[in-house]
Length: 424
Ligand SMILES: [Mn+2]
Image 1 (cartoon, rainbow, N blue to C red):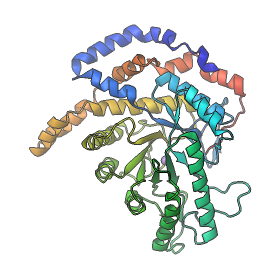
Image 2 (tube, rainbow, N blue to C red; image 1 turned 180 degrees about the horizontal axis):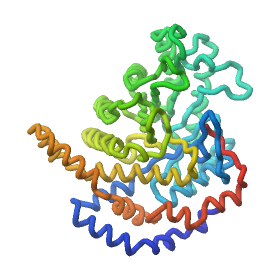
Image 3 (cartoon, protein in one colour; image 1 turned 90 degrees about the horizontal axis):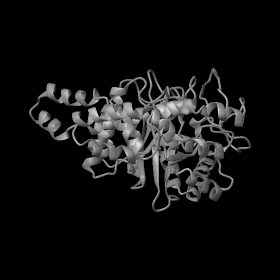
Image 4 (spheres, rainbow, N blue to C red; image 1 turned 90 degrees about the vertical axis):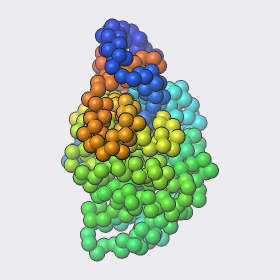
């Protein structure tokens, strides 16, 4: 196994003296750095099983080699990421791309790497080989009861596979909608979808949750049956206490105020899951923090404020996951960058003095409120993030170790330059 030979502390020596200077400087700049470092040590982001291969668009795909060929190798890749940063301690499976043939064995393998199984993802947006009925015109919304039944049965199956793996949540993202005016009765489509979700909901074990993910458009381009947070919240409220909204950063119309959305969902106790990515135009699935890092920071500010108001645990009480796809990067390097961006935004948001911010708001001191936020955002917190990693035996600079240890080269040697990971 590649991991056994990865001597992280050896690589850390290269950067240790520079790191010590930087963290010492920061310790004098900010209040209570150790409390922040401890929170960073605990924070974990799940990696989806479909993010380990090269992403593609409908125009093509340009794989770089050494992709994981099966679920075991996908778990191995996430194990590698987790060894490098100790912040990727969970895997989110997609069914049917990653059906575990021997769940007990797969669960054991993940445990060896210190990984747990995050939310299970069902798929009724594609037709699978040998499938009886087509999802061309939707799944849970379909006008034909038999198609709805097939999609419901699939979701129930995903729950039972998740139970075997120790997962406790099901994420449902539907492509259902319409591409042309007149195609769909919106109210009836919503009603049918709700009834289908209700049939799935009753199969959730006591300690399980269901996350209803919304998306504004694509693959349908006129209407989407779970198109925005309002519609998702309606479903979640009607379904019951185990149902929550899932926010995916890329699933909004341009310029949506996502920080306000998460604040209100937390207020309603209906925010359950969170998918990180970044975008310039639509659901671009770019590396987290690569386009709009300030927006990510503002979202984290609302997440922390809202979670603290409800005494929620930052590390465990929301399902954090990266949902990105990378066309021109090494997928593992891209994931390391995404996790780093998340940790940086989280650390910056932890710097915010909420009492001072509240006071500025009460006094309508708009300038001071902005200063408080931007002072936090403009602080270079990278030494804090690195220090948190150092303390738990991870790499000071995960990307440096990935490259120095020639991990991709070794994976290509082991798996071949033409290996292909299932996914999008
Ligand atoms: Mn998503």
